[in-house]
Length: 257
Length: 338
Image (tube, rainbow over the protein chains, first blue to last red):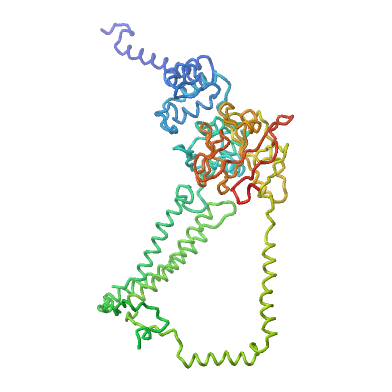
């Protein structure tokens, strides 16, 4: 039995399978990493179109031209896809006044491929460059711009707020820098658009810096109570403040046992 | 003696159905009076509250030094104020609660009732008072010297007039300032707060610009008053979605419309704009305006639409006002239409 050639040995099969897996795995990894490096390559766009047809076309039309239940995606740009799919809002789970944030359904590569396909339909806002997402801008200037352009809906520190007929502006705590930027430049759902002529990329960077500053620093005035203003603060004062005063008044008037 | 006379004028009690005075409740003896052990416990409790007060004062001083206020570090202020506050509150409440507990448990608790005395003075006192008034009148000659009396009345009547004149001068005369803003024919629409003029091509569909008139940024006086009147929201909607009255059709430019940002209800800035429904919501009282339909009120307490600023484009492509607002901006007032 010992004179059997090496390749006939039982463990040889294991080695062959292992080598095969390693080669195909690393080959795939190399292929996908070149994918990312070349955003908008024909292969990626083709891959994105496949994903789009399987997951999005029933609402947005087979060519992204829009259909019943979904708007046209021509010209919305890569930033829009990256925001909507990257925050889990798309694919939407049910129609209603507003689509909610939920667990993300696709991998980074898949989102990138769909974004590349939608971007290939017509020019639109691109995924923002890394230099505008570092949150190291001017928080004071960002705060002023935020109060003028954003705070009426999103609250002075980005806690969010109600809109009409069941819609709402979501809270901004924990939203990534990239998604904040993309929301400003694309105007998802009922949010208006803030293009680069209105708020320059540097302005957007300052706004992101401000939001990250208020996220990371404690409120000076003590407990935030959700930062939603007079309702929470008034309720706290009425229940605990007045309750304490009433309890003391009762105790003062009661006779000792 | 009638029933009425039994009561003095000072005690206005109904005598139709008099309520019987229930008298004092029977005295309850406290545990601290009955047992020395309970008294000692109460004593310790009072002392404990005073000790808490002392500890509170120490916490406040510790907090002041442990969390110093550092220039530029706002969160340092928070801890400083928190511990100072907790310490001082304990310090004051400890004394207060201790004193009350002391009084309630250990000091005498005999019930005492004091009858209310009549409000009417006795006849002697009343006669004496009248005598004093008459004496003063006689000595001063107030009734006798008519000239003095009448000029004194006159002086008293004229005396407050300067104050009335001064009150009339407290603020500027409103005049027609409520009916005009900084907008003139040809005033460029500029971005708040930078004052950079806006080109029509920059306002893409779905965009919202917060707008101030050109020159407002450099005003030296009454800048905020002018801004409060002239603030404008600039939006571009798909021209096909705009419903425009024929006589106002020339007020927009290729789907770009400009409306006063000041709510016609009580003047809050209305700026919660929804891109697809064209709803413009006021955050104060939920007045909702339909921006695509001349800002008609579709919900809430506002009584009239937001005034529209007629706009057009100048030779260089910048957005400019055609004129001032054609009606007063902000809350309605009584002689608004005059």
